[in-house]
Amino acid sequence: MRMRKLTAAFVATAFLAGLGTFAAVAAEEPATTVTTATLAKLLDKEKLTYQQDEDRLRRTYFFTDDRSQQVFLQPQSDVREVGVVEVYSWVMEIKGNLTPALAKRLLEENGSQKLGYFGIEEVDGKSYVFCYHNLPTEGLTSKSLAATMISVAEMADEMEKEQLGEKSDEY
Image (tube, rainbow, N blue to C red; front, side, top):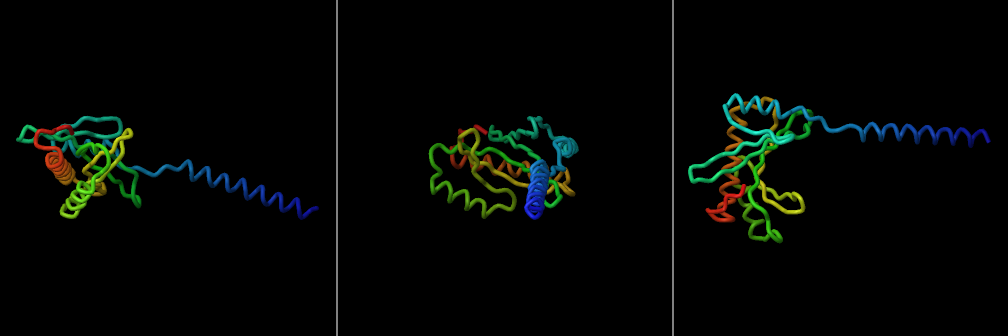
């Protein structure tokens, strides 16, 4: 009888210890050391205008061909204790299924870029093509952030023109 009580006590203790560990792990959220305030300071240093939308910053670039492109800065959770910011821009909505031709074109373009890449993401039940670039923020300068932002804007705008025509300027 004494063995059963010890076994039951051991099982109960192990179960409670497991619950405590599970609760501690579940309560931990990934660290995010970069903030919109940190990014705003870098943009201010370059005298770039922007708007704050919830937990991200937005800048609109205006091009000489009467087109514009919005670029967003979204802080991400740290990677190996290094802050990360995602720089992204909407390119186009995918109406219907992704065609093999569009998929091939995006992959070809990804392979030819020095900076940035194209991806597909679902937003509110619709699929969109985005242009992205993720930057580690440790040592990030205002100049490199500004260069990345304009590069992403130009890539997104060029792909939008290529896929939807010169007259399309939704994003």
